[in-house]
Length: 263
Figure 1 (cartoon, rainbow, N blue to C red):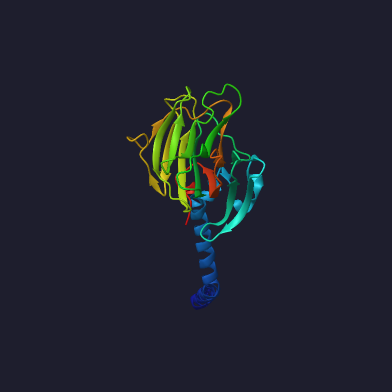
Figure 2: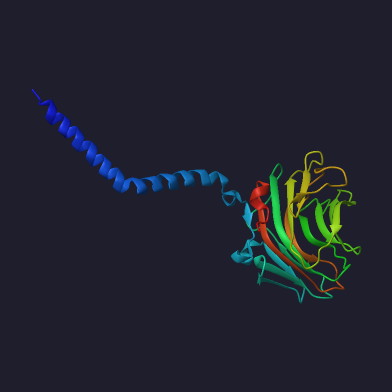
C-alpha cells in the first residue's frame, strides 16, 4: 500500500519544478505566443501582399514594359526630399513625348476590379497645355477609344480627367487648379469592361473622393478598348514647353488602402 505522505511529496515536487520552468521560460514563451498572434493577425492586413504591380522607383526600370522618349527626353530615378526615390520623366522643348508604359507582368482583363495609385509633381510652366500626363491607353486591334481615360493640363491652369467615348468624344469628368511643383496624390478605381453599362471609374485626389461629371462619385463607361489597356505616366504633348513629371508610389492593387500613397 502506497504511503499517502510520499505521494503528496511527489506531487509537490512536480508542482515546484513546473513553477520554476514557467518562471524561467515564461517570458520567452509569452513573447513567442505574442509574435505568433501578431504574425497571424498581420497577414490579412498587410496590403503589400495583395499588390498586383509595384512601380516603386527603387525597383528600377524593369517595372515598366517600355520607356518611350523622343530624341532628348530622359527617364531617371532621383532622390526627393519628401517622397524619397522617385521617377523623373523629363520632356524638353520641341519634344513630343517622354512616358513610361507600365506595368510589367500585369494586364487587366474583362471583369477585373482594380485600383491604380500614384503621386505626381509637375514642374511645368504656368498655363502650359499638354495632351496627357497620365493615360489609360489602349493597345491592339479594333481600337475605338485609343485612351479611355486621360489626365491632361489645360491652358486655364487646371488639371483635368477626361473620358473618351467610342466615338472619340472627350468628356471632362473632373478638373481642379493645378498645384505646380507640389506633390499631389491620385487613386483611380476602375472596373474593367467593354460594356459601358458595367465599366466605371472612381477617383480620389489628395485622399478625397471626387465627384465626376459634376454629379456622382462613379462614372460608367467603356474602360477596356482594343486588346487591352495599360497605364502610362509622363508627358505627352506640350511640345513648346520643357516639362518634368516626377512620379512616385506607383501601384496597382485590388483595394484603395493598398495603393493610396503613404506619407
